[in-house]
Image 1 (cartoon, rainbow, N blue to C red):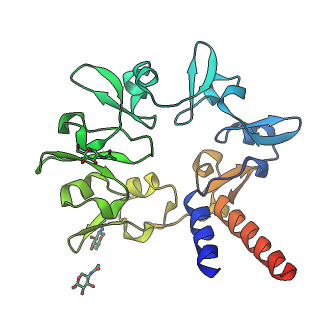
Image 2: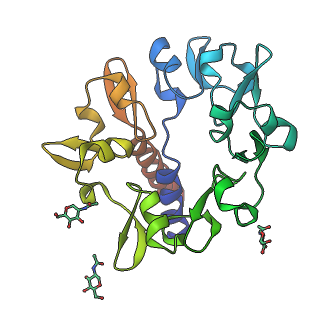
Length: 238
Ligand SMILES: *[C@@H]1O[C@H](CO)[C@@H](O)[C@H](O)[C@H]1NC(C)=O
Ligand SMILES: *[C@@H]1O[C@H](CO)[C@@H](O)[C@H](O)[C@H]1NC(C)=O
Ligand SMILES: *[C@@H]1O[C@H](CO)[C@@H](O)[C@H](O)[C@H]1NC(C)=O
């Protein structure tokens, strides 16, 4: 029972993305993810229901022939992507030999100079030039060499001969810090983001925080709160 609950919390944190229903202001709603304001409430939309090109974004949606479509990687769909769009969509890689975007099924089948993009499962293909191979990255720990680990900086760090996910306080420079959605640069240190302290929407919106009515709030805390509220109700029921 507890294991399942801990797992639930972890899943929530990993998927930590604000739910559209938390946005009450129309423009804040529009500015976030795949949310649109419909009949006075902010709701997550399927690609097909998004009427604007600027909202029809990767990785889920693709604007084509003046319509927004759900992107599903296939030989034919990857090939219609522009070179600069290719690796934004899961399941496609850019083939530098034939100069086109192709479906990506298995990293280890790619030559190292073609080793880019993500598989359909969202895992990236990472080059290992010293062993002349292309490897699927499931997480930082799966990267076996220092070179591959460094290629994923600042998300992964190579320490004690192994690659591990980095935490905010291990990052020393502001640029790397700002690349990590869960971190913020504050007083010359990289720290875990404190959503409430962020003043501007463009610095706020992301997987960790969302911006509504001139305030930046934490997506994850809300999930946590919902979870604990759920847990407490459950305890009363049982
Ligand atoms: C990918 O290709 C390699 C080499 O051909 C093979 O050993 C492996 O089983 C394949 N993986 C998947 C998930 O198909
Ligand atoms: C690295 O390994 C050494 C020896 O096993 C250990 O004492 C040290 O704490 C480790 N450092 C880190 C950062 O894990
Ligand atoms: C940050 O600085 C410390 C102390 O100088 C150093 O040990 C550490 O490796 C640095 N971290 C990174 C990610 O460069």
